[in-house]
Amino acid sequence: MRKNNLSLVLFLILLVISLAAWAYQLQGGLIVTNMRNPFNWGLYIATFAFFVGIAAGG
Image (cartoon, rainbow, N blue to C red; front, side):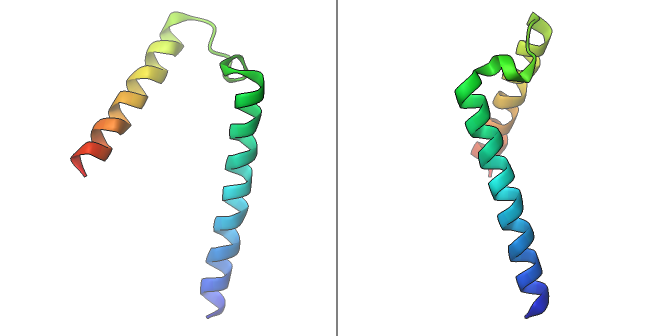
């Protein structure tokens, strides 16, 4: 039971950090990701497409 509680606490901490980072990005826009050249944008879009494909395949 104690191991489950530790896993739950770790999950909640990661969830809070992720939501805070997402809120920061929504507030500041994608400029906070330091994407200022076309290569970074292409990598961002390609990664998004890859994960959409993985989700569809699942």
